[in-house]
Structure formats: structure tokens, C-alpha cells
Image (cartoon, rainbow, N blue to C red; front, side, top):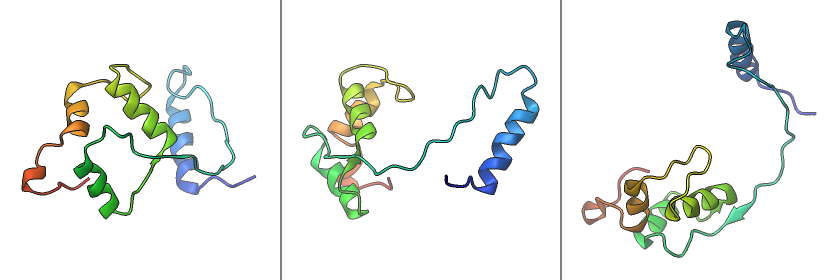
Length: 104
């Protein structure tokens, strides 16, 4: 079993100490490390955005990131990834690329 970092332990213990009614922290679970699952960028993602990520050494997405991008494009809400037309438009035609890529 891997050890939790001291910073993480301090953080969740701080939440637990303030959570007298069990409303903030409902469970603490340990999930063992596992190998990353990768996916290619969806074909509909603007080539300039893919190139900007590649320039930073990012050539593929994690599978959960690709699934979230597909959900946004499909108009669905998925967990922490809320649908918003501006996000979809940024993936399809990123603003500012005529001036060069922005910091990602």
C-alpha cells in the first residue's frame, strides 16, 4: 500500500476537524495507483490547439479528458465538466490563434 503524502493527510484531517455534521467530508478512500489510459485528441479539435499542446509535450489526452470533451461537444453535462458554448467554440476554433497560441 502506498503512503499518503503528509500534505494530503494534513488537508483531509483539516476538513474532518471542521466537519462536525458530516457534510463536507463523507468518505476517505485509498485507490492504488494504476497505469494511465490514453486517447487521441478527437478529430474535431482544431489543429492549432492540438499543435499548441504538442509544443508543450502533450500528444494525447487521458481517456477521461477525451470523454469529457466529447460530452461538452455533445451538449451534455458530465461531472465537473459543465457544458458551455464558449468552451466548445474554443475547441473548434480557438480565439487568439491569429495572434499566436495563448498559454495553456
